[in-house]
Image (tube, rainbow, N blue to C red; front, side, top):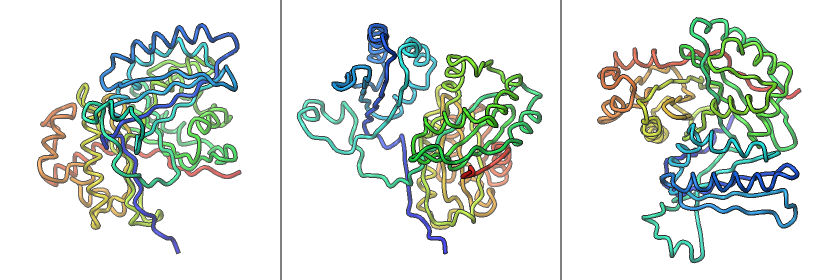
Length: 372
């Protein structure tokens, strides 16, 4: 008998302060170049709205290991910065100095000492109100566009490959990969237990995956050369579509739900606000015992928002809730945030069902990785 899980959640929208930790391992002889690059980066990030402070630390045990920590008023301004083209260009000089990196992001739950007294909460953001319950799964997505007219050929390539083995190492395991398309846009959503970066590196080295990536190269709108580390890094940096919100109600068994993805194109500069609106709707759905939505994951970068749903029954059973606009004035707010404005927003259930059909992404493949 399957036991239903407790409600789990993660969110960039709880308003709490954010601590970002970047672990770096430098190449031999790269210290001077690294420090010069860091000074430039530090001066740039100091002017970013929402940034509070940062520290550069060097290991007392291994001088090639460094740590950069930064504090932000909340997660949204950091995510807007780290996903921007300005950030991509600013950190480029660091790549030649660094052998390996790992980035970690934490909401601040508790703190002690004089820092908090000296920095009043209204000016610096608030603490996370309570611990959230997780499920040990890291959710991430990649998105890119292909040349118009190549969609069917790309879909066939992406659907026709052997899944890589699930086990990455003793602590990391691939759990699930889902591929969707909306027009000429591809979204690959992955679920990982353990270290996301280790899992992505593992997948990228698998022959079956490399063959697929090479096969779709001629169809990509953004050129890349996977044999060139800098080219590959820049492509996957720009393709990253981070999770900004996830909630699982835990009311339904996994075998009783079906996975769907919805695509939203926001107005210029409105992607984060749109993701926040949808996150609020999905928190309400998680509290609604009659809701067919059991799980929602929202991915956002710039003005692209993708909402991944696990739904029991038909997606259009409650079309307004499935779209994220069930409730007073939410459709009007969505109209102010969507590219296309109020003219694109449904005003009744019939229009909502048609809008939902246009927004739903085409499922190409949904696989759980094999253990072998």
